[in-house]
Image (cartoon, rainbow, N blue to C red):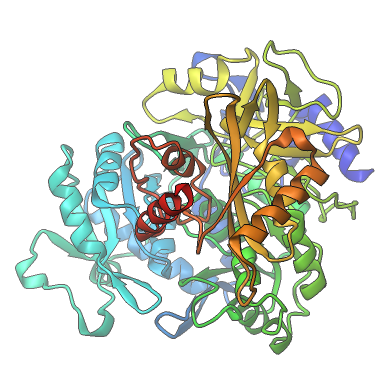
Length: 630
């Protein structure tokens, strides 16, 4: 009941609760005004406080005598590199790179775009921006030049920081040529382009013929150490554009003081990580998980964080995840269910797990996609740990639903994302805005104020923020997700509202059907979407990826899965169509592109999302769907 009492305290005595949490981070000027109304009457936290995120993440630990503790472990199987960076080394690199940015004329209030692979220099760049009060916007390295260009035009950066190249498996990814292309496309021209020359496989930047470029390493080495600049608690630490953006990008703004308070709280109480332990969020800095739980959160809590460059199932095999855990003594890990499903597909019997000593791993968290029960069961059986599935968004910046192993041991309910964490007063509403009884599906909303660390708004577009999140249910934040809450307060996410399909007047969750399909012994991964039907309005259609080495005909699989869904959900589910595919289309962060699949199956025109992991899958799916129709 400790977690429940903490939650109730955070809702009933919110100002006192968060004032106490704010005491656990270092302020230059402690806030007296805990909760107030900001612009447009949107609630803000700690408005009169002053601090610096880089100071909390780096300098404070050096001052406290932990300079020799490892801050980051850079593990890059694609370049066969392992590098350990202490807090003292991190402080030196970050402060000198900040000096370099200062020498280029950057100052508090400016913006910077960072477009880099998973290398330590990306962390240096982010923390150096935070050190000076420069608002950074990290653009995921998988984005094409056009997507980079529209982000340049939205946030008008004074500098663009990049690398010469990235690596995927054994392929060189040309970052600098993409940057040049984006620069030509964009109306706004950053004053400086700073490039870290990786010199991969002999490829070097031609500095003599590229006088407009600034050498990252030279800038760092020749610059002087600079101190952290105090900023207001409400100062924008970063802008993060949500994945899948089309047209005008949607840049989520994150504050500094509320974010630091929330991340420190979540590392201790939700993730249950002690200072000095190793925490691994297997994500990318281009996503919110990377910002919160690779770069900032672990360092705020004086943890060692892993910067991993490569795909955990491909470099060199599906045992890489277990190798990293053993080698670096990972205590707590966070990854997407899609990564676990991919490992399960390649190593269904868990033979590779047995090769490694992963006894250091205490807790496994999952988020990004809802995790099916079959994958949870496989992980528990093969690894010996029951994963904790939890839920949050780019907009929240930290978990909204979870269990809290840092506070107490609680029952894990399969397919649930846990309970609302402190600060998130979550309700399930019907279309008219009335709260629903337990076990009734509706819209997941959160009563304002959102707790510290949640978004301040959308960069340069309050109207979009208001109509997208606040207008549908006044006084509440609309998450865009559907959910069910049970009588014990556990919440079951049914997916984005547009993943609820209407079959002949029956509102059905595709997530529930996916749960049934994934329960088939031969299915490694699946996706169910609603497609247009003249008679019933919509009907469900399933895609299944089979485990390696299984032998079953598509016809038999379809029969068995249809029977399974009928047994679990009933005839009303109407799932009759299953097609076997080699892989599912996903974003580079591992989310299944359901809208793309729906549009393709409906035979409508579609745009290939900028976030897609591999465009060649489009041709595979088109051929498969055509074959199935025949």
